[in-house]
Image (cartoon, rainbow, N blue to C red):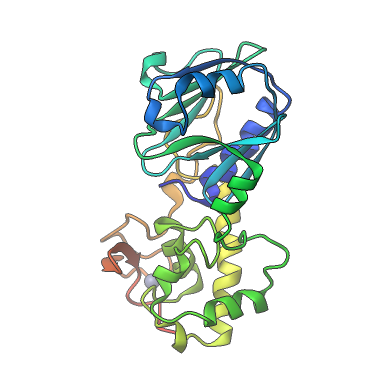
Amino acid sequence: MPEWPEMENYRRLLSPRVSGQKITRVVVNRPKTINEPEDTFQGELLGHRILFVERRGKQLLFHLDDGNRLVLHLMLGGWLAYGTEGPKADSHFQVILGFEDGDNLYFGGLRLGYLHRLSAKTVNEELKNLGPDPFDPRLTPEAFRTRLSARRGKLKPAMTDQRLVSGIGNCYADEICFDAQIHPETPIPSLEAEAADRLYHSMRKVLEEAVEGGGYMDHPLTADDTITGGFDDQCRVYDRKGEPCVRCGTPIEKGETAGRKMFFCPHCQRMG
Ligand SMILES: [Zn+2]
């Protein structure tokens, strides 16, 4: 599932392309993807402009000039494409938004994901339990430590809980734990303050590297996009079972914690 770096990469690439653009075409091939009758959705969007694109956790919010927002969650398998022509036939996409300059934004793979048109108030209500962004300036090392220490249980399920910090999922939780040299199953009460600080710095370092590298999505956004997906082969532990640890050479192990896959180095990632 796309996480913070993938969605932030989309936001950065889409912002200059769609901000200020008027929506002149709305195609809905899968009504379940949207949250209202198809003609209402089309009628309410046509002629309106996207003002800017915001990211909250793993969601993208397209702010419209009538005060409403289009909220996108890609969930598992969702992806985006942008251009005058899509990389596949239009019928392949669940929703397509066309703009006055002839470009289109294609929403693909949205069988579990959604694109909802909501008022600002409803969006705030729906996202009110979302934790702070990893780069929120108010999320200082101290604030992170305090949020973490309010938890029981193991580290990985907490890191992927959107209420703790928003935007981190299965892949980057493993990458962050690896970078911090902390075992993902470490019980939170046994984490030293110094280890929590290491985790905080690794969180920002790993996410920054991943977004700079373009995240791991395997479809380019535009025909000439050389950024998206560049980080795919740079993960150090995720999906690398049996491969040597880049730090110590020990084979990476795969395990499961709280029903989620986890990948870690059994030698250089310690409990606490
Ligand atoms: Zn190692």
